[in-house]
Length: 121
Image 1 (spheres, rainbow, N blue to C red):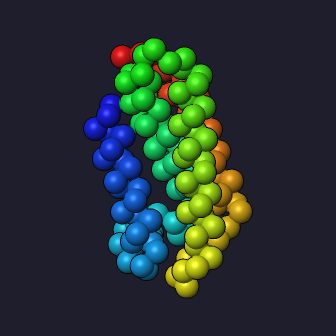
Image 2: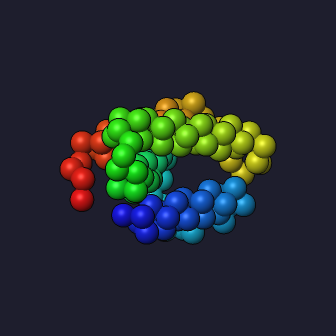
């Protein structure tokens, strides 16, 4: 699970960099071509990111309570995601959106809940 978390994190960082520099590949841009496709993308991507990272930390920190680990990871990710969304105000090619932020944070919540409810490996 640790490798999945690291690889997915690198994937997300790559997507953010490509979006910030207006270099997203056409096949990724086309995924957003339907109404609210970007909101769905935020929800799925950040939900999966939180799921993978939380599961990795749950297995790495067995002495910590599951709730503490899940909440801590979710809060840290929520802070970073909020900073990233607000940073879009400073990129001509990006658009800040409270709805995008809401979809991202909802994804974090659902991903964290799913990781919390999943049995230990």
